[in-house]
Length: 166
Image 1: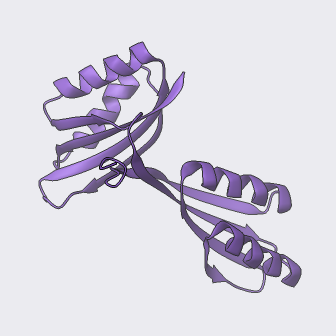
Image 2: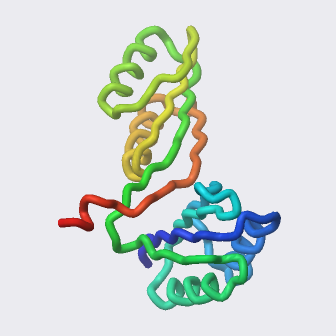
């Protein structure tokens, strides 16, 4: 089993997301992450999909997606150079002044933003790789047991430019 990434260009129409995600659930494929957004062309949306699968299953997924009428293009990002980021918000509750000082230090080390805080809570915004967000999450879970709330968006990715020219 291996972590896989797909980029789909699909028609920007009602029901496309439901049909694409239904294709995965109908075959009992589990999605790790799915993000969708309109592209520079308002009639086309880009989906970034993450799943964990073996080679055979992954090839089946790509073939089924290519057969879908709404899918314009399927790009396998698994083994190519890409820039990929995930949005994550972490709220830490029940903070003392000492906790808040420590959280500000952690935010500097992890290059994340404190986007809001009050006397007893801090809200962090992290736009990092999934691995880096996992590392931050693990650290904060250990330091602030049962005091954090996490909201994660799926990853988005774009093919790298500079690496291709070398």
